[in-house]
Structures are given as structure tokens and as C-alpha cells.
Amino acid sequence: MINWLIANWIEIIGAIAGFIYIFLEIKGKPSMWPIGLITSIFYILVFFYSGFYAEMGLQFYYVFISIYGWYWWINGAKYKQQKILSISYLNKKTGVVLTIISAFLFVAISFLLINYTDSTVPYWDSFTTSLSITATWMLARKIIEHWYIWILVNFVSIGLYFYKDLYLTSILFAAYFVLSIVGFIEWKKIANSASQ
Picture 1 (cartoon, rainbow, N blue to C red):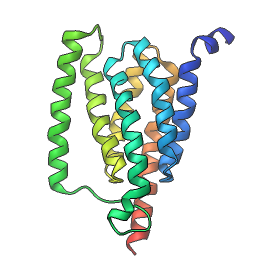
Picture 2: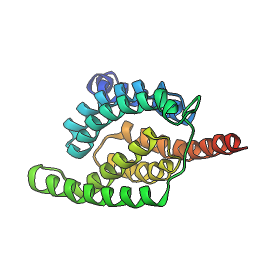
Picture 3: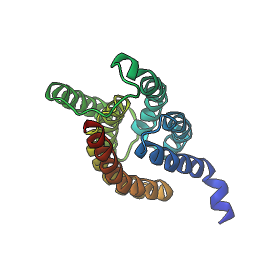
């Protein structure tokens, strides 16, 4: 057990930070963003050593989107003349644009992984990565439908990480899957109470 803890300490810290992050996200707390940044830094290393190159690249994106999201959640309300940034709903135009961007990202990331890495799961890695980019941008803008994407991504990731022997990360994503459902329900309650 001690040997496993020593060998996997980066994944352990990343997973603990990830659990803290998702609980803060469910509650809609801006403090989730710096915790997310810390989680991403640890998972850059975890995914590099595991050969999840698109997921590793995604963690770099998460570092930057964490800064953007933190700023937007704190200051975005000013742009909308609100006291706090409220939960919003996805409009059709933005939905179409995000679908096109996600499809483009999937194709581009798949191409890179197939042609320039030794990835053993290029399509699945591309799938979860492209949707995660979209979902995180939606989260930064506090769009409630981001939870639907996380539910799908987290479900797929459970098996993907288990397949690559990242058991703790697989457990983390099983929790993320359940908590994504809880998060959607909580955000829906918040949005409904704000509209009354």
C-alpha cells in the first residue's frame, strides 16, 4: 500500500483536488476555479505518464480557462448589470456554433493523436477532450447545459481510465458522473428560484 501511495502521489493529490473542485462547482462557488487550476497542474503529469496526450493538452487549456472563468465569475456580473453572475441557458445560435467547434476539435485532435503520438485510444481521448473543452467554456459562462456534456464525458471517462489502469482517476470520474447529475439538479433549482 505504501509503495502504491508513493508511486501514485501525483494522481492522489490531483484526485483529491478534483473532488474539492466538483463540490465547489455544484455549489456555484468562484473558489472552484483556483482549485481547478491546481487539479489541472497535477493531471498534466498524470496524463503525460499515462499516454493520454489529448487529455494532457486539455489540462493546459484548463489552466487558462480557470483563470478566465475565475475572472468572469467575479467580474462578469458587472457586464450584465448583476450583483452576481447568474446561471444562463444555451441559445440555439451558440449551441450550433459549439457543436461545430466540438466536431472540428474532435477531427483535429484525432488526426494529431493518430499521426503524431503513440496513443492507444486516440478516438476516445479526442472525444472526451473535445467535449470537455466545450463544456468548460460553457461553465465559465455559467451556461447550465454544460452539465449534460459533463454527464456524457464523465461516463465515458470511467471506462477509458480504467482501461488505462488509472483506477483512482476512474473512481474520480465515477464520482464526477454522479455529481454531474447532482450539479445539474442543483443549478436548475438555483436558476428556477432566481427567476421567481
